[in-house]
Image 1 (tube, one colour):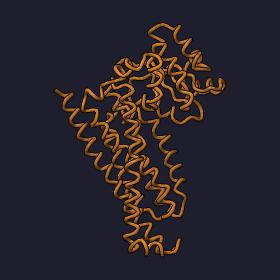
Image 2: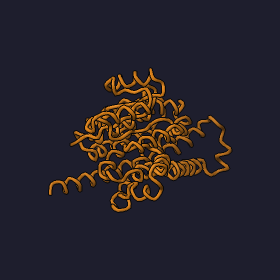
Image 3: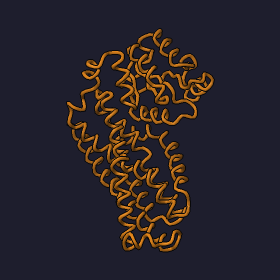
Length: 346
């Protein structure tokens, strides 16, 4: 399989999202990072390139230098695409310059890429060429729904952990989130090899089991120790889900372009808008039911054993509800894997 040579703008030392993009590229297996302008600070850009193993002569101090010098290289050596992972307000100029240079551009903010493409090619041409694959292949929307469920297993509980655990286990929920983020940072470095060993659907299917177990155990956590054990299982389960799902969609719909990228990101954003409020409603309903109504709940003393019992039951109910989603995904990923394996065998 021929690799696509790409350069990265931003994403150097101290950056977070650059590592996510590099992980997703490694999982896809057909992308090779060969150049980079990894920071607006020249010293940090060079140091970052050294850490990533980039050649010194292809580690640039600015994106303008990278585009200019890469254009002078032979066709079979120069970059074919750029991934732009700078802060949002700095993305448009390099995107426009890269498009004008004839390079493909990867940005996770669809509106910036669309605006840059319109500037270079004109709106009519962009609408035609931006990637109509999601509208030509209905199966894309199956994966759109799967992405929504996948994000529901990670993003919604992540936003909910701080609210609930702070009230039930005697430790700030934000500490659990920091701990979970650290696990994800380490584990995602192994996503590529695991994906190639199990296939993307196989890896996703396996991940659902610790994710479901972790969410269920979070519902029963009653101390910092049990909360950390449960969070460890949940983190191990969900850490591969989002980057692997992005790679899976990209691999199956390579011509979806910015439409595909934007729609996948939109599916994740929908989780915060739709699923998180539902978790809050489930929590509130369970809380009031346990207390015996709103007036009875309002009469409870903050910090009392009765209040703790009410909140513990509400947290238990909400986490047990969201734990069903990874179990659903186990069968969904399994069916996709079985169906695709059958097609490849014919």
